[in-house]
Amino acid sequence: MASRDVVSYDTPLSRALKVLAGLFLALYLVWTLLPFFVMFVSSFKDLLEAFKLPAVGDWAGITVFFEFTPTFKHYTSLFTENSFGTYILNSLIAAGGSAVISVIFGSLAAYSLSRVDFRGKQDLFFWIISTRMAPVVAVMVPLYAIFRSLDLVGTLPGLILAYTTFNLPFAIWILKGFFDNVPFAIEEAQMVDGSTRFQAFRSILPLVAPGIGAFVVLCILFAWNDFLFAAIIGSGGAKTLPVATRELVQPQNIQWGSIMAAGVVTTAPMMLLGLVIRKYLVTGLTMGAVKE
Amino acid sequence: MTDVSPISANPREVAAQIFRARAHSAEVEARPQSEITNKPRSFNPPMPKRYYYYLMAPAIAILAFISLYPFFWLIVMSLQDVDIGGGEWVGFKNYVKLFSDGRFLDGWWLLAQYSVMCLGLQVGLGVLLAVVVNSSKYEKYLVTALLMPMMMAPAVAGLLWLFLYNGTFGWYHWILQSAGILDNASILASANTAMYAIVLVDVWQWTPLITIIALAGLKRVPRDQLEANMVDGASPLRNFFAITMPNLYPVLLIAVLLRFMDNFRFIDSVLVLTGGGPGSATKILPVYLFEVAFKFFKLGRGAAIALTLLIVTIILGKLLVRVFEKPQNEKG
Image (cartoon, rainbow over all chains, first blue to last red; front, top):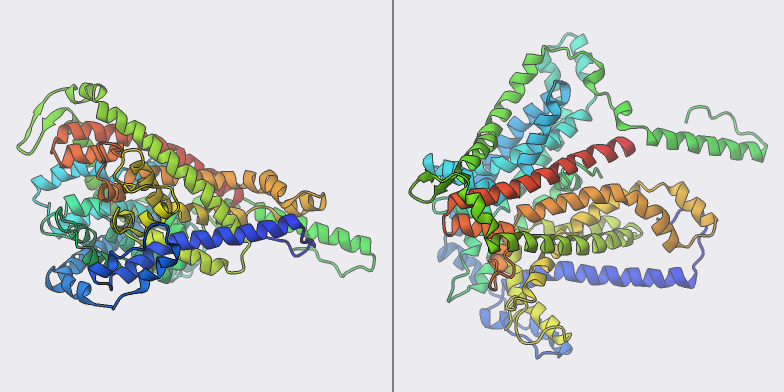
């Protein structure tokens, strides 16, 4: 950031740097946003139109991309030929269920962990965070064996429980940092004024409520976007959106139009939610290491 | 700022005052977080401790059931020959076998290659991007746009890139071909290039994470140091390497460790894009584990592999936690 206090002169070098920076930014934005654009536009194209490409090296031929008559048939086929309605519901229940469970129990645990000290607390923390960081495939091997013996494979409760393996430690970890920032003096003052402990706890809830809400959304996002757990633990009875989208890839017949439409259906809600909780997104995605 | 006395007419004194005030505010900013926030440590907790334990009990119980209990099972399973029917004890056979299993060792090697390539590109691009975005007027909008790939399910991202990479109708394939980088074969079809394909997808999706972390780090770079250096005649480039980068290292370390562990954690996009192929050119260890455990249902062998993977992640996690605690205390 150029400081306001020091006058900086435009030297040829800094001017060249500025141009380069602008160019880099433009290129990067194209590379980052183009896939979304292609997905969105292709979901409205007939397959033949979606497959049209200009000749190799014919850069002017890029306009081919825009030559199409929009159609909604891929979207309607998702709900008529496939039962994406059910899959959306499954995704919602599994992601929402685990998010709510995780945040309710997680916030209670986080609150008490933030307010009390005891021996072995650091170890407890390390266990919690490593549960969150463990590779999904590795966790799934024993979980699959256990869930199979409990008949939880292929059910929504099983999937909710599976998602809780990463959402609950996440919620505890993040919300603990959150409660740490609420001065204990507030509760203390309440108690001096004669309120009970529970009332004191309730008195700080409004302070943390927006954050807790945001982390419910973030937990939903993580669970909604999961593929591995859903593919193995949810296989059969609890098919979620990413798995259903993947299943549109069949050996002989890849239904690209439907895949693009399903991609839009899966991604758009999460992008909107991401915008809604934009303020907490960075904290959440970096496990609380970075606060914006 | 505490002691701002009426402004004196003497310009020297004014300068001295401003200097003092600045030094003071810098000192306040540099104070460790723990001094500012009221941590309960300094108080006696007013509730009896057990009340707090009741509050955390349910979460700990759930976590024990879905994390400790499976971990115990994982160890038991790794000593058994488990498949669909049931298990029988085989002692350490599963582990001994791993050492002669070329795919297992290759898996680690490929995972290392994959992680290093991803991280190298992400850190390079991410920091560069952060610096550029940081000096832009439209920072807020840019960051929002950059965050978007992270909102997409990795499996869906994999499918989308499968479409873009396709050898007959993929737009990225067309671009790479037109630029003379690729010939007719798709980037996914050749064992030499498939690894780059999955790296690119990871870079596409997760570079923004490094960018936002680096951005937060850039905000903490002390401005007076930059100014002082500029007054002394340093070029912006020199400023960047002498002052900005050293200040970025702590946050970048966090970023790198987070991404490192995620590369172990998520294989959704790799599974969708290549499934480990062609041949086993992209069969990084978690993908191999997936195949052993959930394609061939050799759960015992899978458990042994999973355990090695877990041990490495736990070591990385220990590192991460240590780094997590440091910069927060130092910089608040």
